Structure formats: structure tokens, C-alpha cells
Amino acid sequence: MKKIIIISLIALFSSGTLSYSQDGNLYLQKSQMTFSYQMGFPTGDLKDFIPENDFLGWDYELKTMVTHNLAIGGHIGYQGFYKKFPRDTYEFPQGAITTTIFKYYYTIPMQMVATWFFMPEGMVQPYLGMNVGVNYNERRGEIGIYLLEDNSWNFSFAPEAGVIIPFGKYSTWGANLRAKYNYNVYNREDNLGMDFNNLAYWNMMFGLTYTW
Image (cartoon, rainbow, N blue to C red):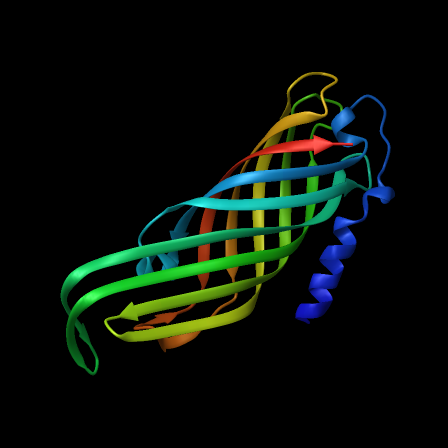
């Protein structure tokens, strides 16, 4: 399953020749490439595990128009969260320990994406999108000399909303601002000191989109 999805993403990344041509709007004529800086905000069980935001994420996306307002493609990204808990006495079901605790969570989404543009005739392009694929997830806890780790591939999806603002009527570059909710189908019982029913986080994304 993992190999099939990765191969599909590679095929989508190279699908620029399948573009749909529309007169009157440069941004919705051909292929689009977007590179984004993103900030992460954990929610749900992930926020209980690491209650810290992260400001060092990125995302690369490539899409092509298939109708006058629908684009399809794929993306790959990275988001990481980290928290250092001060030296203290921490209680566990098996007892207690006095130490410093470090917690980490890293994720790499690899997903297919479909984007619907609401105003294909306009210059500014608001849109909604849906990302579906897999995430590589790595959670780690360092408790004194002990290392607890969980690595996995999980099905994931991420609805998003955003807007592309070209730098001019005939510019091939534009600003891409969006928000995305990332949800991983992930369940663990009493893993790294707590039960997990999901891994979920929000992204605020600021990027540059290029069309050709």
C-alpha cells in the first residue's frame, strides 16, 4: 500500500503535460508549483503529549488543472514538535522517577491533493482542497536513560482552505496563504505513557506559487 501511494504521488508530480487550458486567467491555465513555510499547532491527544507549537515546517506541492476550476496533484511536507520538561519527579503506573523528560513528534505527509477554485475568472483565487494519503510518524520520549519510541505509517487526510494572490495581472508568481487540518488514523493504548486515539494538528501556511 505504501509503495503504491508513493508511486502515485511521483506520477502526479510529473503530470504537468495533462494541464487544462483556460483563457483569461494565467493562474488557472497550466501547472502550479507551491513551496510553503508552515507553522504547526497540535490538538487533541497530540497536544496532551506535546503542548508546544512548532514554527519550522515546510511543504512542497505540484498540481495541474484538469477542468476550468479543478486541480489535482500531490505534495510532501514536514512538521516536527518538541518539548523539554524540567527536572522533576514524575509518577507512572509502575512508580515514579526524578529526571528531565524530552518528547518529540515528527511527521512527513505524502498525499494526493484536489483543489477547487471558486472564482476561476477572477485575479484573486480563493479555494478549498482535500489531501489524502499517508504520513510517516515518529514519536519519541526520552526519560532519563530510557528511550521509548514509536514509528509508523498511517492513513491521513487534511482538508484545507486558502487563497492565491498573484503579484500582478500577468505575473507567474503569487502569494499562497492557507490553513490546513491534518488528521492521522492512529491508535495506541498506554504507549509512551498515555493512550492515543489520533494524531492531529493545524497548519498555518505561507507560500509562493509559480505557474508555467
